[in-house]
Image 1 (cartoon, rainbow, N blue to C red):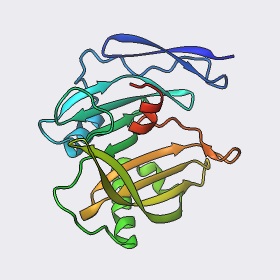
Image 2: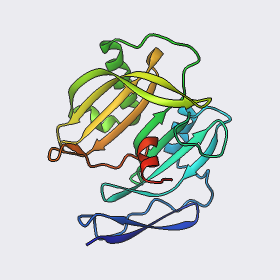
Image 3: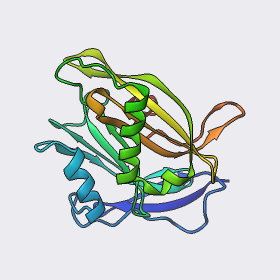
Image 4: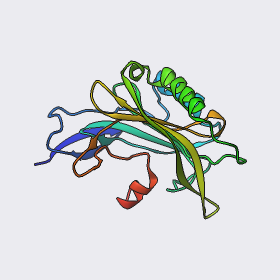
Length: 217
């Protein structure tokens, strides 16, 4: 039996459903008096990774493995357009970055970093934005990874090197995808993987194809 929990953002109350094993007590995302009322930690991250002039087009509270988080999305121009260029983050109400995606296409093709360079860039990102993971990590692999981004109605490939790691303390997965010139383009953490039937359990709020399949947002 599913249990309802309440979360709110931007002064609006949202009703969400989580799985039966969710905590009985409600987990709240906010409230935030105005959409741009970021915490100091949020402000620092936004200043570093969201280009000036981008518009916030989405902010809400969502369930993530029985808890809550806030996806926030910026685009060069509103309204929200799934599949196109954007910068998004997923913020935990516990006060840390849960995920990040920079789906902006580069101005020109540039070579991808090698494995050593990708790992160094991933380490630098973790030191700055997820230092709690550094001492618990186990490197799984480093491989090329592509994301598809629409621009001008046409699909383009955003390429990177995915540094996939496992948290030894809880068995959850996390990774940093490093693009050309060492630019971090994706970070996800605390990902629960179900060995049977062999799929990801954790919701994919930063993935536009996943959102589109579910009629989101």
